[in-house]
Length: 163
Image (cartoon, rainbow, N blue to C red; front, top):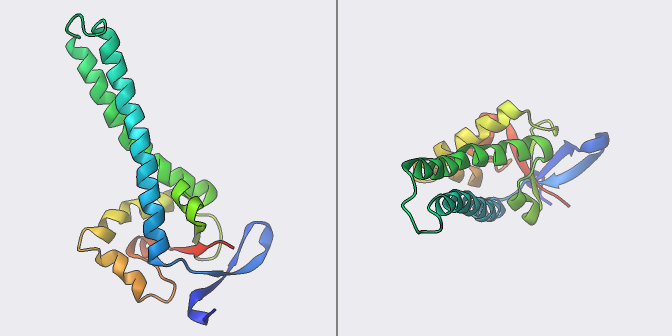
């Protein structure tokens, strides 16, 4: 392992370990897996809203009331805070989303500890800034010694590979 690819971090129990900073490829794969998970949940929200519309229309025998469609839209809009909580709570509690667990990477504070909820929210808010200007915020990781992206710099985090 080259020194520029190694991070000495403290893990649970005060144990020190040499961990490799996660590359952009692994991080992108983890994000794609998270999108697959979130789209699956979105389909559940859409199905729940559609089911109540179907039930209120007596299985298509009558026109459903307008309120049924408003409720359906409310189910779909409820997905937005769900998606935010998915990232923020999983990062703050375990340091990993489902996609990150699958590829064995973890987001940690630069000092090796857990990330507070507020900094996790800041990290999530930094995602659009990382990808919108032609992925320039992600490209930073290609030149950064710790492979940190723009949203990592904002939240003072690093992403490491787990053994």
